[in-house]
Image (cartoon, rainbow, N blue to C red; front, top):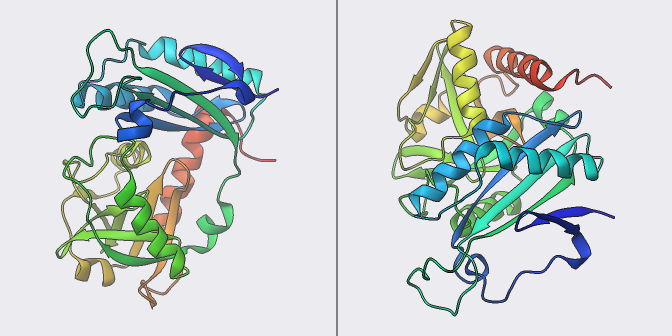
Length: 286
């Protein structure tokens, strides 16, 4: 039996149901998080859960579970499902009420669901790099909220898939923002540049960890907006996310980045990031 969490209780996944008038289903009115699991342990769990609560506050969604309680529930689910390598997905919606754009009253409680999934590490992509294309960023202006409203993201990702690319790099005019499901960084003359953590991007947890690793290892990093031309002329480009970790982008719009192979600074960051995973979760060697 596979266990999921429904409103704080563990139940058989086959018996888990949500109401037709759940506001997450009808409006995308909710927030979510995805946490990586290595060796049966969550990586950067507190950071993800704190961001979940922050996203809830930004849309006035009262998540009554503190980080410690949420973490304990997710750890229990991982054990029950015997998950060693994969992800935990969780979301809170504003609950179930008759369809109405305005928020329901305080008597309507948020709906909390979570599940686990086995997934491997994207080792081939991390080793060889991936292709990307450019897509105009059509999303709303609160990309800092990890909301269930992902239509703009999935439309961009679909364009990438149809073009044989792994990721769509989004831009507003000439300014690069982020990927459809990742943060984007470039390397120029030994310095990493990535869009600042404004309302135009999601401040990724992997992105934050990269910033910390750069500071601890005296790697130059600047949070500043850069252009499409900067992107195309970069020595290296990489994306970062919970699922993709740190993945080099070696080709954009059919043209190679740098030498067309993963660059040395990206490789160094991958090594530092893997060391951090092992520090928190144990060896990644099979």
